[in-house]
Length: 114
Length: 112
Image (tube, rainbow over all chains, first blue to last red):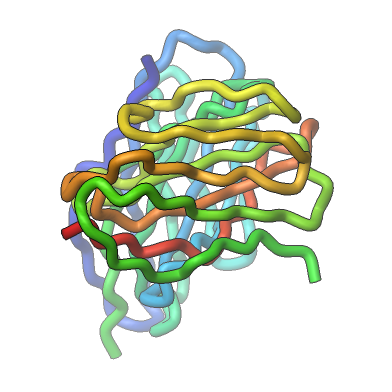
């Protein structure tokens, strides 16, 4: 079974600084997807970024980028120029290719301080 | 507006009283899922459906039932709720050929 581990329950960063959230996963699959979701205090789940395992290039979405290391089964999220609105719970998630079985990590609570 | 809706958003009930949480999507998505979110555990998948009349168990299916009679609806049924089912529940949907899931707003359930 696939497992997703987020080893940092809580993190904080100063506004405008850069922060990296860690995620590792365990799978025997060769083709899969990885995601980072953001959950602000409203509890809404918002997709931040996604990565397809067969793509070598790291995904980027504006201030958000990932460092995908397939061999190490690592998928970290970097947030540049942190903003107060980035304060949220962040979940890393794994999904097998062509399947709807999605696994989430326990989450990292990020606080951006003014 | 493309969206996933859940009802009710908040529910307080008592042990053993059957309840249903509805989920509906207006995006013609094939895939739908139910998750529960608990502190320190993240989101865990309860059931998922890859098409009408096709459902599969996720990580934590015990105590739950689902049905997919229509493409747009995927209700979650708790036949005899217990306090350990107190949680925040999310429904999600996605198109067949796209892996991104679109989440509903969540249903907070308290079982006394």
